[in-house]
Image 1 (cartoon, protein in one colour):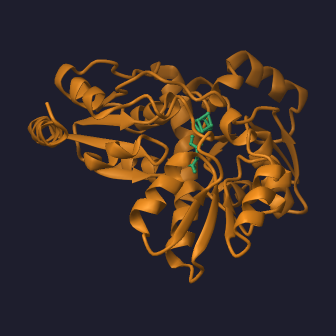
Image 2: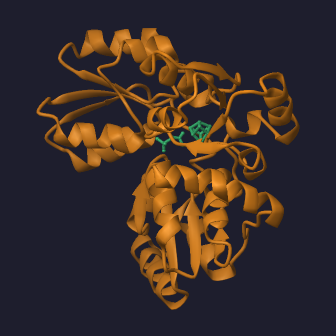
Length: 301
Ligand code: 13P
Ligand code: SF4
């Protein structure tokens, strides 16, 4: 089957089954050809919360599909490839309980990049686009933050009077980006504006002109009058910007900065899942009931 036939077939089955395809912007760019929505973690969970589709095919990683299932218990959610997020897998139920027991008086904020079981033990969820607002909303002088230590320290810097005790997790993909990489790209492109994701190390964020979620970075680039941008996040964002803004010079921080889990899906995998309904994502009911509060509290902010 050629690409055109593949896309036609996917669209036909999607309609027949009243299915929707949601894709994160770190996915292989060809997925955009069939996706109903491409965005960041916040946009994807907002959309998952209000869809009328009967089935959701999630082109993303496990915690994203789990979040969609928790918000839509009566709908079927599928992951074409069962791939996890390495950061989310750095903390499990036992570890979150231990972490909380050492700091019993502070509320716990969990980054959406965490498993449903871990979310079920937390007070409120956040994404990279709303982490500051979420922490602020707790009106607490001290907050526990899991699992990303980089996002936690960025939030703490932006909210001067709140002490954040962070779990020591991190994103292995963003953690690879160094100040050396930024300085080198800046030297080669002295007029370029540096946009970075808050999962990057603090020293990288300090060299950046703008820090935001993947969608916020894309919006910044769209609205800016500048012409050159260094994109310090997963490669998928720079590729989409290069596709969409041909009048701007988009400089990926490195072709090596990609998330292997996010790159597993192909159009063939999407078609296979639509046809065979494999890899349905299920969440334990007791866990889902607790985790939904944590996610819905965030969506209200
Ligand atoms: P956002 O989609 O919130 O920018 O987060 C990026 C990410 O790493 C998702 O796994
Ligand atoms: Fe997880 Fe990092 Fe991949 Fe995002 S880029 S899914 S945080 S491993």
